[in-house]
Length: 387
Image: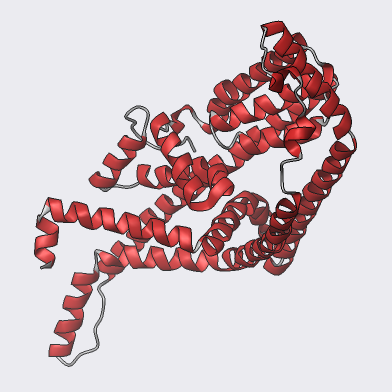
């Protein structure tokens, strides 16, 4: 039966499809476990450089972990506190925004000759009055505790990943280094049992195992460094782009520049779609605040130029021009990961896909290399990212 599965391409195809569906179902149903785990691993790669530096200076690992967790908690608390304060301030100024938005829509309707009374006497307050705020408040309240639980889960996973990553790496290294030598070792043990002697592994086989461990160690190290390089570089590029957006909007005197900069940092993890959202939101604010289409267009032009410079010029230079993800793959990855894990899945979609592609690009399997080529915008040779 197993021979038939191996030799029948059609049956093997359907087995693979069923396996993919089963994996997708598992990832979706156990998202409360897998999502914190994935985020914790991304945090592990982000903190790895500073952790290696600290442990290299003989600082105990438990102190390093406490230091990492303190940074994570401080940043999380700072972001949430800032968001809450900003939303409170936004709520205080909401009546003024209502008035301006109503005036913009009504003036536009008159200018365009629209006779519909809905636009002639447009009222955003009337639209918002149809929202059931009790249900909305209940939804927000009901998601607060799961959010706190997820943060604690992430920290829990992070601690065990930092302490156990090396052990997992060494186990994988030994497993695959010995794999190809196993038949020879079994033959030596069998002969020793037949001769009632203690099995002795020849030095040449020990050296071969050691050489394979070195090769595998270098491969795993290369993959780890490439993943780490991508994650850190992407975070830094998005961070600087977010700061640039904040600075520009501050100079243009658009309200809540830090909020829009934070959105630019987050949404630009989603190519094209995220960049568009990060551009549209502050432009809408500029339009409502100044009631000027020309000012909104100027804001859009400046922010669009910044987005282009950072994500079409600087990002390829920093991350490497050979990120080379197929645009169709990016679209599907956003849709699939978004379906599995919601908004967070969409934010993580391209980094997750890039990590998978890095691993495939370093494989010697012809099937995996073929899959890597399918994922690429253009066929590529050599390493995935420059080391």
